[in-house]
Amino acid sequence: MLFLFRIIKFSFQDIARNIWLTIATVMILLLALFSINTLIAVRLISDNAVSAVKEKIDISLYLSAEATESQIMDLKTQITNLDNVANVNYISKQSAMDSFRVKYENNPEVLAALSELGRNPLSPSLIIIPKNFDQSDLVINGLKAINNPIIESRDFSDNTSILTKINNITKRINELGLFVISVFILISLLVVYNAIRVAIYTHRQEIEIMRLVGASNYFIYLPYLCSAIVYSLLSTLVIISIFYPLLTLIQPYLEVFFMGYSINILSYFVDNFVLIFGSQFLIVVFINALASLFAVRKYSKI
Amino acid sequence: MINLENVSKTYRSKVKVVKNVNIIVKPGEFVSIVGQSGAGKTTIVRLLIGEEKADEGKIMVGDWDITNIRKKEVPYLRRQIGVIFQDFKLLPKKTLEENTSFALEVSGGKLSKIKKIVPSVLKIVGLYEERKRYPHEVSGGEQQRTAIARALVHQPKILLADEPTGNLDAINANDIINLLLRINKFGTTVILVTHNKEIVNRLNKRVITMDHGQIINDQEHGKYLL
Image (cartoon, rainbow over all chains, first blue to last red; front, top):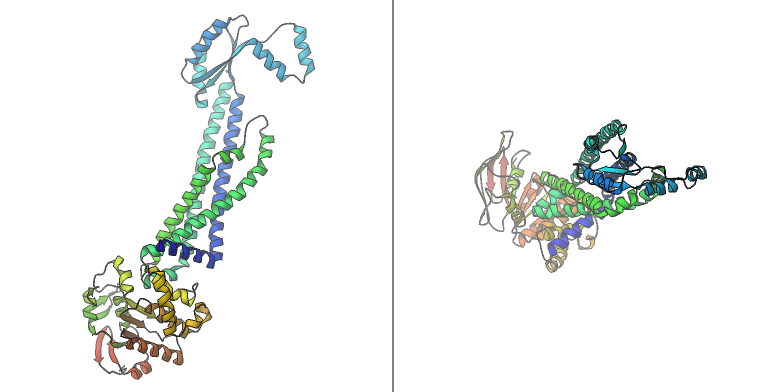
């Protein structure tokens, strides 16, 4: 207990009496954490953008207006049983009409034309959702193989090339994003590692004296570990207090940009608070601890 | 108390800095080790505090054979031998009192013991009133006295002083030597490493003279010969 108390005491004394070194170390940690969190946010926005584009593409089968409910249900079951199909939504003639009316509720001319027609001109349809967007081609091939007379038209022939393009773009974004994040994290780790080593380099005289007066390695190392935890905690708390207001500021602009799509990076950071900031805190503590251990070993050879 | 038996030490540069040295220091003795730069005096100090290991020979401190001392045992050795250096080696961000108590704190000394011993050693070295000051706020002599206070808190049986007056003026140097003599009177064995001729001649104590890593003279009431 006394041992622990003294380690904490020495650590806090060191933090307070070397306040500029503390500020510099925390600032470097902050920059690294800010960069990583910015990358997470950018990745989230790009993922949402890709999903938004994907949502625009339907794999739809338009059915004959005369098709009976049982024929449609049989076809739906047949498609549902295909590999790679997650779900099949049946849009009846009436549902299609209801959606149409909602969509054009502010356009009286279209609605008037529909009334004049005196009947429901829309066809029932099946909307097919693949298990995985990347496997859309397989789903389309499966649908092409179905030869059912109630199928009036198949609306996916034009989508194939778009799907291929989007798949390629998504793949490249993922590869590039992963590369950029990896490089950035590596640079951040090296910067933090060296910052801590520089901090301890300035303490080399102190470490030497500690050894001379009979301090054990644990007693030399643990106050630095304790300081490392404090630096990490401080920088994590500051990044939280900077990042959340920033996200709150950006969110309305994102909502305008992605109008009609659900994108909320603020709630993503709130929902994944422990995962995002907890893991960042632990990683920073780990690097700090490692750098401290190496530096103490190097300077305590006396 | 201290026994060096046929001790030799060679550094990586292949230069043999200590050659076949034999020294026996009895409890309570005051011994000066003198010699010019490169004579091997400081290497003897480094061997005695476990900073270096001898290539040949045997080193005993009390009943403890430290010839091949393990790394984890070194802190325990250093709690039994007080050491002071020319450059004081004080922690600049700690007060004189904190520097003194630090040696006890790192070795797990109880708070009650620290409260009792630290003020008393600070009084012995005449720094009790200055205890709240930082090293840069006091003179070189006062810094060296703080280093002595720190070395004394473990109540060591041996005090090694490696050129303790090297950075001090004549008055402060005399004060430090007088302090070492007082500490020796209390029963602590003192080994003074120096090349200050005047001090050695004034002491009229045992003098071991080294030259090129070898002992060339060992006199009970010696003088600085070189």
